[in-house]
Amino acid sequence: MRTIEIPELALVALIGASGSGKSTLARGHFLPTEVLSSDFFRGLVSDDENDQTCTHDAFDALYYILEKRLARGKLTVVDATNVRAEDRKRLIEHARKYHGFAVAIVVNTPEKTCQERNSHRSDRAFGRHVVRNQILDLKRGLRGLERGPRISFRPYQRFPLSRYLRRSNLSKCRNMGIQI
Image (cartoon, rainbow, N blue to C red; front, side):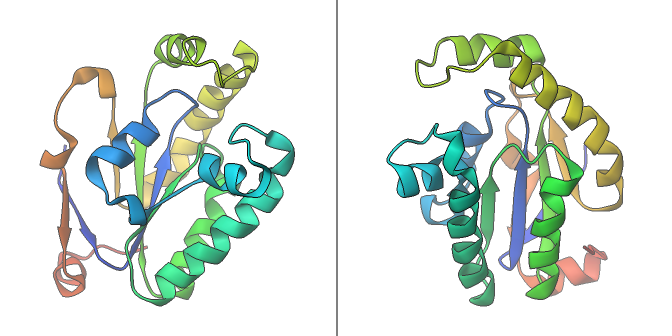
């Protein structure tokens, strides 16, 4: 696995099914102010992080903050499933608009592990089919990720992600040929 240099002006998309470990990864490797969680924004607009009926409003708020951060040249991490290509298209457009880099971190956790984790979370009361569909969408959506910088890992392998993820200045990334 290669190391990916992430510049300060980057949009990092965490990609994975519910229960895959995206939020845990975000807490362990990024500043709290850098992470925009779709669950958090659902909570902001409805007082319930699991209220799927407010997803549209939550993402409106998330994208508003995303634009403000990218306009200021700040590293921004989007913690959402992002498993479908169409889910990521808007993120890529925003990175390009602000001349930033788009980096994908794929949290490729087995379905069984995701299902088990979600079963222990009282706030995740959705059917097993939801995670199954997210895993299928993830597998289909990975084909389009081969062109850009990404890290794909399986959290159950227990290797330190920090070995493969390093921040650097923008000029160093351009010299390495990293493109959106």
